[in-house]
Image (cartoon, rainbow, N blue to C red):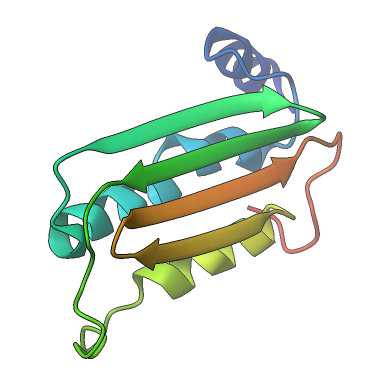
Length: 121
Protein backbone atom coordinates (compact mmCIF):
# COMPACT_ATOMS: atom_id res chain seq x y z
CA UNK A 1 0.00 0.00 0.00
CA UNK A 2 1.44 3.36 -0.91
CA UNK A 3 1.48 6.40 1.38
CA UNK A 4 -1.50 8.06 -0.35
CA UNK A 5 -3.70 5.01 0.26
CA UNK A 6 -2.56 4.81 3.88
CA UNK A 7 -3.42 8.48 4.42
CA UNK A 8 -6.85 8.07 2.82
CA UNK A 9 -7.56 4.95 4.87
CA UNK A 10 -6.51 6.74 8.06
CA UNK A 11 -8.64 9.77 7.20
CA UNK A 12 -11.72 7.63 6.72
CA UNK A 13 -11.10 5.71 9.95
CA UNK A 14 -10.08 2.48 8.24
CA UNK A 15 -6.91 0.71 9.31
CA UNK A 16 -4.25 0.11 6.68
CA UNK A 17 -5.18 -2.93 4.62
CA UNK A 18 -5.63 -4.06 1.06
CA UNK A 19 -5.65 -1.18 -1.39
CA UNK A 20 -8.90 -2.48 -2.89
CA UNK A 21 -10.63 -2.63 0.49
CA UNK A 22 -11.12 1.11 0.84
CA UNK A 23 -12.15 1.42 -2.79
CA UNK A 24 -14.79 -1.27 -2.29
CA UNK A 25 -16.39 0.70 0.49
CA UNK A 26 -16.19 4.01 -1.32
CA UNK A 27 -19.28 3.23 -3.36
CA UNK A 28 -19.98 0.28 -5.66
CA UNK A 29 -21.64 -2.13 -3.23
CA UNK A 30 -23.21 0.64 -1.15
CA UNK A 31 -24.42 2.43 -4.27
CA UNK A 32 -25.96 -0.74 -5.70
CA UNK A 33 -27.67 -1.59 -2.42
CA UNK A 34 -29.17 1.90 -2.17
CA UNK A 35 -30.21 1.83 -5.84
CA UNK A 36 -32.04 -1.45 -5.21
CA UNK A 37 -33.84 0.07 -2.23
CA UNK A 38 -34.96 3.04 -4.34
CA UNK A 39 -36.07 0.88 -7.27
CA UNK A 40 -37.68 -2.05 -5.52
CA UNK A 41 -38.18 -1.76 -1.76
CA UNK A 42 -40.92 0.87 -1.45
CA UNK A 43 -39.19 1.79 1.82
CA UNK A 44 -39.81 4.77 4.07
CA UNK A 45 -36.54 4.36 5.99
CA UNK A 46 -33.07 3.17 5.00
CA UNK A 47 -30.22 2.62 7.44
CA UNK A 48 -26.56 2.39 6.47
CA UNK A 49 -24.13 1.06 9.07
CA UNK A 50 -20.38 0.59 8.86
CA UNK A 51 -18.73 -1.32 11.69
CA UNK A 52 -15.13 -2.25 12.40
CA UNK A 53 -14.99 -5.13 14.88
CA UNK A 54 -13.53 -8.60 15.39
CA UNK A 55 -10.96 -8.15 12.64
CA UNK A 56 -13.51 -7.35 9.96
CA UNK A 57 -15.25 -4.44 8.35
CA UNK A 58 -19.00 -4.82 7.96
CA UNK A 59 -21.30 -2.73 5.79
CA UNK A 60 -25.02 -3.17 6.29
CA UNK A 61 -27.85 -1.50 4.39
CA UNK A 62 -31.34 -2.20 5.71
CA UNK A 63 -34.77 -0.84 4.90
CA UNK A 64 -38.35 -1.14 6.09
CA UNK A 65 -39.97 -1.68 2.70
CA UNK A 66 -42.00 -4.69 1.62
CA UNK A 67 -39.79 -5.16 -1.44
CA UNK A 68 -40.97 -6.49 -4.77
CA UNK A 69 -44.05 -8.70 -4.94
CA UNK A 70 -43.19 -12.38 -4.57
CA UNK A 71 -44.76 -13.15 -7.94
CA UNK A 72 -42.94 -10.32 -9.74
CA UNK A 73 -40.09 -11.64 -11.91
CA UNK A 74 -36.59 -10.22 -11.53
CA UNK A 75 -35.82 -7.19 -13.68
CA UNK A 76 -34.70 -8.26 -17.13
CA UNK A 77 -30.98 -7.65 -17.46
CA UNK A 78 -30.70 -6.83 -13.75
CA UNK A 79 -27.23 -7.65 -12.50
CA UNK A 80 -27.05 -5.68 -9.26
CA UNK A 81 -27.01 -8.59 -6.83
CA UNK A 82 -24.60 -10.64 -8.89
CA UNK A 83 -22.26 -7.65 -9.28
CA UNK A 84 -22.27 -7.11 -5.52
CA UNK A 85 -21.49 -10.81 -4.96
CA UNK A 86 -18.54 -10.66 -7.38
CA UNK A 87 -17.14 -7.56 -5.66
CA UNK A 88 -17.51 -9.18 -2.23
CA UNK A 89 -15.70 -12.30 -3.41
CA UNK A 90 -12.84 -10.25 -4.87
CA UNK A 91 -12.34 -8.77 -1.41
CA UNK A 92 -12.38 -12.17 0.25
CA UNK A 93 -15.63 -11.20 1.95
CA UNK A 94 -19.13 -12.54 2.31
CA UNK A 95 -22.35 -10.98 1.10
CA UNK A 96 -25.74 -11.75 2.57
CA UNK A 97 -28.92 -10.43 0.96
CA UNK A 98 -32.32 -10.98 2.52
CA UNK A 99 -35.69 -9.39 1.96
CA UNK A 100 -39.26 -9.98 2.98
CA UNK A 101 -42.45 -8.16 3.92
CA UNK A 102 -40.78 -6.53 6.96
CA UNK A 103 -37.85 -5.10 5.00
CA UNK A 104 -34.60 -5.93 3.33
CA UNK A 105 -30.97 -6.18 4.29
CA UNK A 106 -27.67 -6.29 2.43
CA UNK A 107 -24.71 -7.20 4.63
CA UNK A 108 -21.11 -7.27 3.47
CA UNK A 109 -18.38 -8.57 5.79
CA UNK A 110 -14.73 -8.28 4.78
CA UNK A 111 -11.96 -9.63 7.00
CA UNK A 112 -9.09 -7.21 7.42
CA UNK A 113 -5.80 -8.64 6.24
CA UNK A 114 -2.43 -7.34 5.22
CA UNK A 115 -2.67 -8.83 1.73
CA UNK A 116 -5.09 -8.34 -1.14
CA UNK A 117 -7.24 -11.47 -1.57
CA UNK A 118 -6.84 -13.63 -4.66
CA UNK A 119 -8.49 -12.02 -7.65
CA UNK A 120 -7.49 -8.49 -6.52
CA UNK A 121 -9.88 -5.56 -6.23
